Image (cartoon, rainbow, N blue to C red):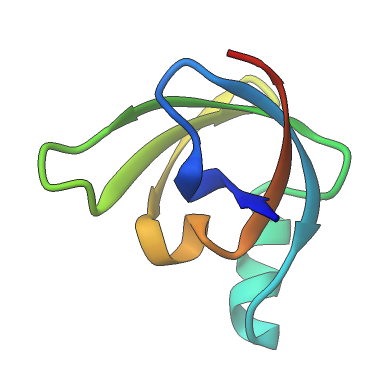
Length: 77
């Protein structure tokens, strides 16, 4: 299982599942992070706790713990 948190910056992947508690899952789904969506890890913060993700033409900042709830399948490096 690979999560969004495990990807290197610049990697594009397809979201395969969204985990977490009901409230976390709902928040991520409302942001457009639904299974089947292509996502790209743009960059990580210097402390590695925040990640900038591009999905559906928008850029979203996620905590590393939230990114760990998103299972992905890498499509290219």
